[in-house]
Length: 60
Image (cartoon, rainbow, N blue to C red):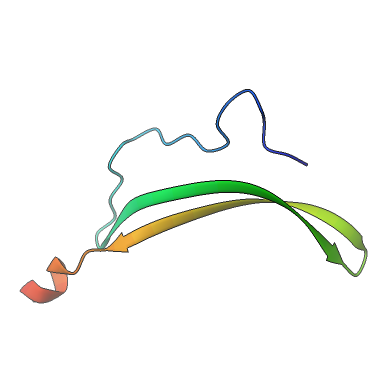
């Protein structure tokens, strides 16, 4: 199992994604082969990095 080669594995449709207390600052995609009891299996991994917004807590 692999990420598709014809396009980026992760497509962010909206720039500057924010949640109430966080901002998306980075994301990566990778493929890993791991040994499990039934045998070798592929994993597709998507990692998202968020930065916490401390302003909400200072104002409270």
